Length: 390
Image 1: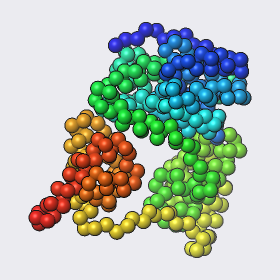
Image 2 (image 1 turned 90 degrees about the vertical axis):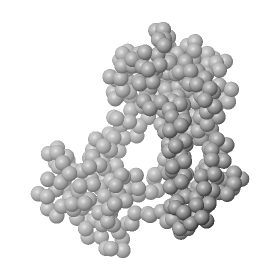
Image 3 (image 1 turned 45 degrees about the vertical axis):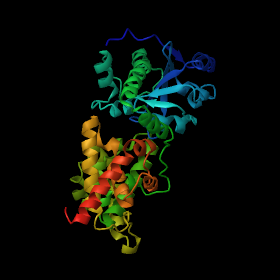
């Protein structure tokens, strides 16, 4: 299906303009939303554009020129207006972080696509496959905090949200046909409540991939390097990855260079980085090597309760059931029952559908759609055990 040329949009950078947005959208049943941010260019990322569109009109709002968003907050919080996003997690967190905006009645077209068994769920691929629309992504990684914005970038930003209303309508129809509308609705309700991660009181290494494999001394050095990188990034107002890469910091923490010459060949440091940060990196490594054993950090390990001997068989049965169900529904198996949930179900070993209520984090739609089948799969394990078969 091809769609007509996108609607023209209005650029909003005044409070009077924002009031006009609120008036135009307050009676709309569906409003699509998209954001542009500057995470590639600054230490503390911020929302730089908010795109909002209905079936009848489209707006590109400049939040860097505005101070009061109380006029449009009700659009997001009202339960009778559906807000359509594509890949909403980041946007929901960002809107709450920057403007205190809370969202009700969210519909995520990326999530809906996954529940329909669509494998290529990026917006560019979805719009191409559905509407034969090709999005030009050449501005995707540009600095959206620059002002004035080139008109070409504003035009680019306006496009994504314009198609989301029509896309959502199609996806909802298909979800209804397959009986999966309620599944997505519950997932979207949970998604609308995500919030920015608060890591101020936690070691930085907890968010560093691979840190759990490091010994305590390497972990101590890594933490000091991460803190240094963060300080430099904040001072220079640049993203942390543009100061020093994760690969570089991990290499220094593991290799622990004992001379400046060794540091030069460690982790791919450039000559510029060595000149700016080399002395500090070497001193931090040296200090880490001198820390007493009692002061070294330990990576927190999750403790698991003891499980019965039948636990592996239950887990295997659940995985076999889950994979077969996913194949029959043409869905990603992890959507039906991810690894963590399978472990939780196997631990509880519900003997009937009522007992499934004791399984932590299982969703209502999963209990309703698959509760009886889960109980049956686990019961088969019990019967085999009693007969002495495997």
